[in-house]
Length: 146
Image 1 (cartoon, rainbow, N blue to C red):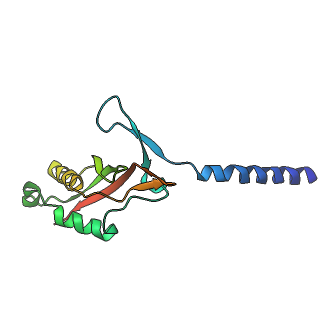
Image 2 (cartoon, helix red, strand yellow):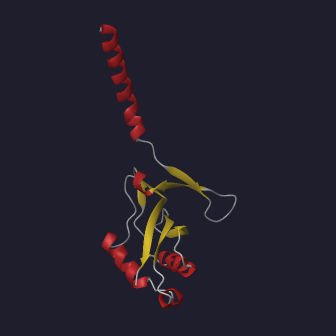
Image 3 (cartoon, rainbow, N blue to C red):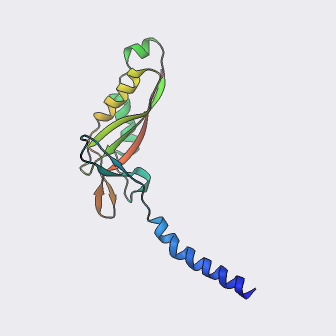
């Protein structure tokens, strides 16, 4: 009984020593935005201390997408709807780069329009880890509904 109690206590001490370091783990990926020689580390949106933010917040982002998005004529004429899931990187200067389609719509013109809208975004407030600005990957769905 005493031996089991000691083992339980040791296990508890071990977990309390390990858990704080587990909480510090960051999800970081390596991205090659332009050239084949240079790579940069990019933090995932949920794993930074201060997340990047669109000017005007979430409401400002929705308004920007709704004002900038133009329904492609072919898709509109053929009643094609869909949702395009895109990712992009908010750099340390707040600029949007490396726009990609993660999951596209049935019509390629919707995918191209989603990329165009994201590419026109103004500078975001930067994401931070501690006091340092870091590049952060953001995932954003753009819906096309008639």
